[in-house]
Image (cartoon, rainbow, N blue to C red; front, side):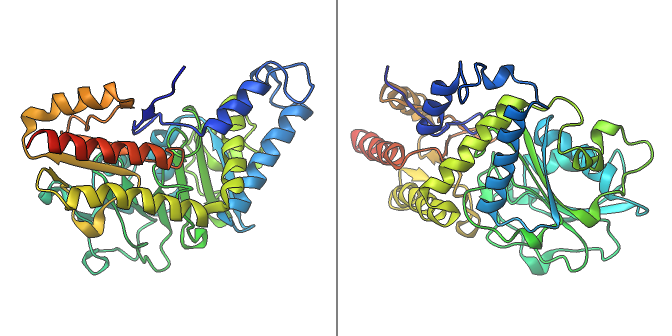
Length: 360
């Protein structure tokens, strides 16, 4: 069997070493006589897996002690409702930056619970730029400020962390978490779906500053209350045990690669290779402003869109799959998360150059 280079935006590639380890442990984890997916989530075997996963994530991300780490079901989309339910407190409004499809979904959900103040909106340019810090119309009385550092669909990424003063900053890091070092202390809450840089789908990780717990509205369901999960070690109900286990293997793998500093070097190098081909050609183009280009999701277009189908067919024949751009954007999109090996990017670059030459 030959594995292909999967450029999907998510669920995405997992490190080969991680999957091989999971394969070895599938039927019998650590001589327990059980698969991880068969274990009681409260048994000593699984508790050791869960505890180590959290410890490794804390180490990799340098998460301060006064932050809780929650392993939740429902994916990142559930957080769109959980955030206002938990963080509004006695306030009536929250600030949101609208920079793409996922920002829009978060905003639509938040409007069910509070007044949403749009402090920046790049829809006028087709979500291809990042708003400058000076343009943000922040409300000092807002309960929080929410933004999406990287828009997976549009391939737009902030090149700075917004300054929000005393108002907690909330970030949907689904497509950038673990791709480089970040200063967790600049955020009140970070959340991320697992199926891009963490592990299989079915899990969301929430990193929340402890002082933001205990503010949930009275009508918040227990399962939607962050304090419920924080007080129960994310074991209030049966968690997504196998996804949590796989995430732990990924955290170990990142440590083995040299941590987030090493991942950042690799990820920047991978992205630069693709952008160099795009910028060095009049055959390929990028819709995103240079200061807003994503390291993780790279959309690009062909000068002649009639060639799109041929490009995709040739790529697939060469083992380069799921390169079709999102239907709302068109063109191509290469998602190159941590698990995409540099060899995969090199193969894509070589194919792009060969395809262009063939058309001339």
